[in-house]
Image 1: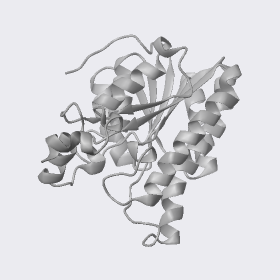
Image 2: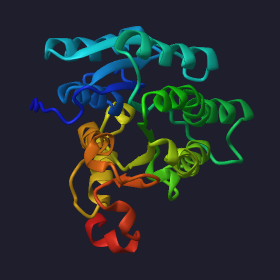
Image 3: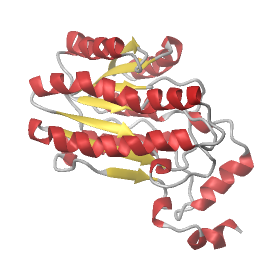
Image 4: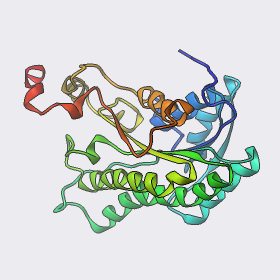
Length: 268
């Protein structure tokens, strides 16, 4: 259901990884759409123009303000150009959502050096590069908000072996806390969201059995979607969260609060 408001009225936001390849919403797409519904002017950033266009079309159809920017966020010059585009099109930058991420499986014994570098570059280096250029612009405008997308896999070992993905998401947690401290006096708040077992575009190909197991593993026993992450991001990006910085917010049906044995009755 479309719900509009004014919680981000007058704000300019960049959302990376805001496109989608399926009819099932991804976190970037959901955040871009929800931010536009609440008054933000949104740069819909993605490596794929086609995928970003799907999100942009939805925002435009709802009367929101947004534009597309095609970017490879592992490239320094392209990240700078993206921030420059926000300033040129909308006059500044207030919110940066670092959402780009890829997943790969494997233990340290199995992962190749090339795949390790790819995942760390896409999932972690990209957030450093986008923030490097966003922060000076935010300072010029009096402050801003950065939200980095981590994962519960960055806090604990996940349901599959994915050491490079988990290492990158753990790095996001550490970087978030450092950024919050380093730039707090510049009126920049930096937080992270750690999604749990969402059913979203990134995992749209999992089996029904895996989907059901993931649902049952959380204390709430309900399935999360990209929109649950988007609502959390909307709060953290808004002035309602003006005194919150340096936190990692799990959006996970309570999963991080439980030990495996605590959930055993629900998994048998």
